[in-house]
Length: 156
Image (cartoon, rainbow, N blue to C red):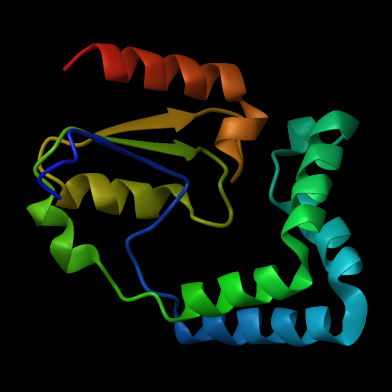
């Protein structure tokens, strides 16, 4: 931790999964294991991007290709790791470096209130909300996120 000079937290949460969310992940894992990974991805991607990007075939294709590259086995491992992730909210106050939290206003995977919660727990943290953006802010609004990060890295 002492070597970290600053941190950006993008579309994330400090919370552990709720029991309901873990149950949902288990259902998805079973669906994927039954050979329906492609079907899951095709249904999930449109729900994780802002409606204004629903017709953006390039974005949707990019997200689907990313999911294909990850593949069903790695995806299931990721879900299990997330299910086992501990609640880190009690540790937020110990973050002593400059912290930027970025979240899409309409993020349905890690809603804005979870970013607000992290900012409230991290001394001096700054929150930036990306408008007309769901969960993939760095892909839905890459220029906005890139500009924010570049500016943030240049100035203390």
